[in-house]
Length: 149
Image (cartoon, rainbow, N blue to C red; front, side):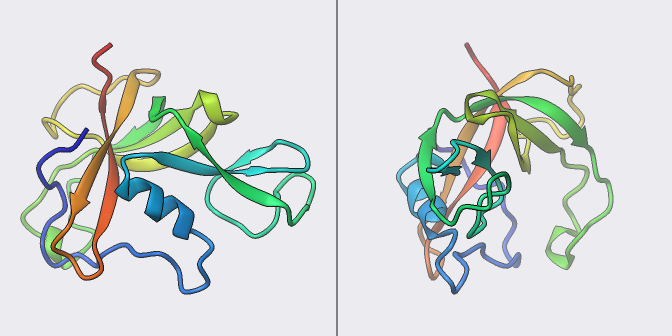
């Protein structure tokens, strides 16, 4: 599912690292798919992307599609701008989302909706893919919203 832009003009565009490590993640977001790393040797899930497994130290780490659903593990409501482009945007809600299907790894993102809404630890959320087709290069952000089902 897509939504109107949440990202303010003037913020640096997120792009894949020059070494290509996280390219599969960014390519998948363009298709509306959430991908995370999983070790092919021991099966451990991990985030953020690394060349080596955090558990068994294998270099045989791949990417696997996961359901874009999780639960809020932690959250914060910043009122101060963390970048000049956010000077007029505040507060906003940042959530740490635990992906149960992916071994409980956690991803950061914005919680869409009213920035003053009540936020509950453990609340179910779902990924929302926000495309930025006019950017050079184009990219898609993963945001979060309260799950509807």
